[in-house]
Length: 361
Image (cartoon, rainbow, N blue to C red; front, side):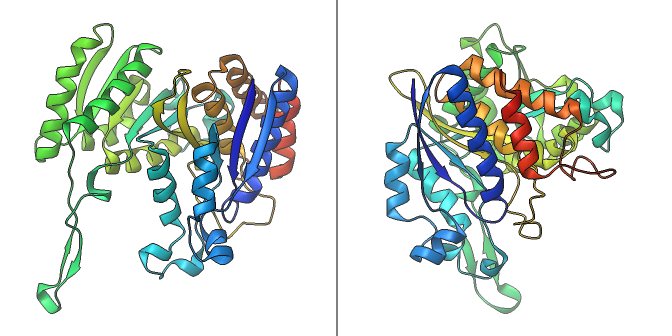
């Protein structure tokens, strides 16, 4: 197979962790006999510096032409007070819209070697293995009207949470499909005791459930879901939720994984005729400018995103499994970065990337 992949290193540590993810991707292709075509583009702060916009037209063109896109983190402190259209994060919204990705999949797994890295008790974390499915194109982040108006005591900020039946249905069917291929359990997270959007969400989920009679469905309020993630995470297999709830709860999953540097993500759109999914892949963590350029960042979230890309966009299940097995092998060896090894001599970003690549079988 030929893999045509767009690389968007982004800002800060994005450049460093993406480099190691590409190293692993190249090793997978050479090991399993695939041809790899890499193209690099600009996104985020680096794109603003070089082109004046966080999402250049050339990057949009490259993203549409590629089979899949692998990204690093975006964001730089110098843009913190910039208007929204001039912030690096605007590039993320732009590329998601161009590719039409609507489901963000965030696997959260507690590797045995990292049980001690979690602040939770070992018996609570051990065995955790879930996927959080976050709707990506709707909800309060996109709804209108929005903005700040007025002055003095009457100055008002407004955001609108809105969902259509179609938006809820497509993310629900994707989540049910994922659950069907795992442990056949789906938890739908909402706030239906307060929010009308959640009441519609629950109604649509219930209407779709009979299409998947082999999957056990439960509804759980978002506040209880947040609590259960730390009290009993093993109860969850696949969770599906709207945009803001998913943003918050998926980051909470970092507590279970031991470090936010461990979390990969896949943003998925429609299926191509081949059956592969349109995909945008990136680690969950930010650009971490405080450690950028120091070869300290954990590349495993970015490398795990390569495994997700191989699975969803290319259907290469053996190759994806090989990457995940290599990650676990390196974790078991203790060759980890400082976020996972506060005591002793940590490995560098480069050393961890090389170790994973060498472990590919």
